[in-house]
Amino acid sequence: MTNIADWLIPCLRQVQVLKQTNSLSHALLITGADGVGQEELAHEMVKDLMCEKNQAAACGTCHSCQLMSADTHPDFRVLNGEASTIKVDQVRLLVRQISQKPQVGQNKVVLITHAQAMNINAANAVLKALEEPADRTFFVLTSSQSSSLMPTIRSRCLLVNVPTPSLSEVKSWLLQQPDGETLSSLFWLTTQPFRLLSIQQQNKTQLYAGLPDQLTSMLRGVVAVSAVLKGLDSNNIEDYCNGLAAILHQCICHSTGAPIDEALQTIYDTLIARLGIQTLMLRYQSLQKLKSDLQKTNLNPIMQLTHELNQW
Image 1 (tube, rainbow, N blue to C red):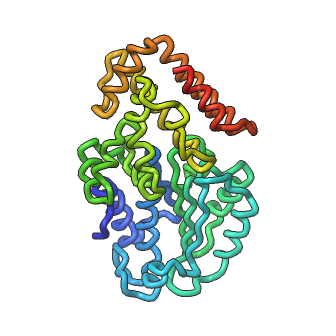
Image 2 (image 1 turned 180 degrees about the horizontal axis):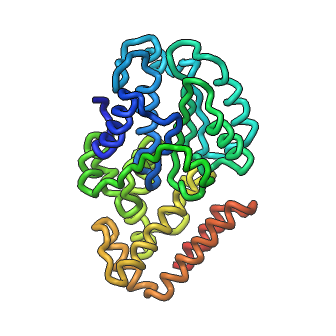
């Protein structure tokens, strides 16, 4: 069995059994909450599908497996919708590329990650490809918003629902990752494991980990707002705003009786004593508006965020 997160293994085995018994649909839709591992599961499934051996799991040794390992397989194509909209010309080009017979192994595979990013024309082009599948071609789609996909696309796919792991499962898995213990301290931000891993891979762990203490020092007058914002730029301002919003949201929820992460207990006490719940809610609304405005306008983000924090 390949080394993937424990909660993904049952889904992988389900598809492997269907593959081995020649019962697998030509289209798979892997769904689940954002950050639970749809993309990681999809890549493992693709490896199995590309393998030249007639067995459930990829052998790892055949020519196709070696090409997949080197990320150079000519019969495997990917469209990634994480960062931008997937457009119809991208889909049409991809469909043309996989319309011929496999160049190396037995199958061709198209992977479309974050498929909810397809615009309507791209979705229709994918639907046509699913309705008229090329021989020995598999489509694997992933989405955290599958309800936004066209019903006709969903109906033509085998649905693979990835479960949301428990907190204990996430903690155990994180301890196997680099800097996992620090990532476990960020459950106030998110408990979705692969979102946390993405933060680590982008070298943004310390940005979030130090935020509660920095804000507490600012609120108590120990450091100035300018010192708290030192080092922010266009590459991390959105992350910083997301961290601020998460802290305020957790504090608001705690004020109504919800538990709060240990990392936020001190800043919660400080915020409530300084602002009160009504002002805290106003600041949360203001921060959400600021996040939206920064995406739509050419406002100076540091200046705007400085003004916001001066209201705290």
